[in-house]
Image (cartoon, rainbow, N blue to C red; front, side, top):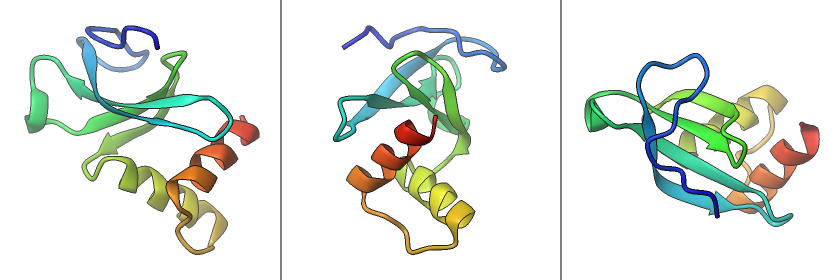
Length: 91
């Protein structure tokens, strides 16, 4: 796994560090990122293993990601395995 500490994310100020990650069923990894200076005082980001932004303004961890995807498809909120698989296949 890549070192996801103190990295810059395009379109966002400062540096960010991973506080959690999820591995998809097809081998990809998603990271929940927290700002290095502001920490819990600012919303998190979710990125992929290439540091590409998937979701911003995250306040409920990977649950926000599941909700965002479910809102796009108007279906039930998927479990984390099917959720991340769908995202990575769609990209």
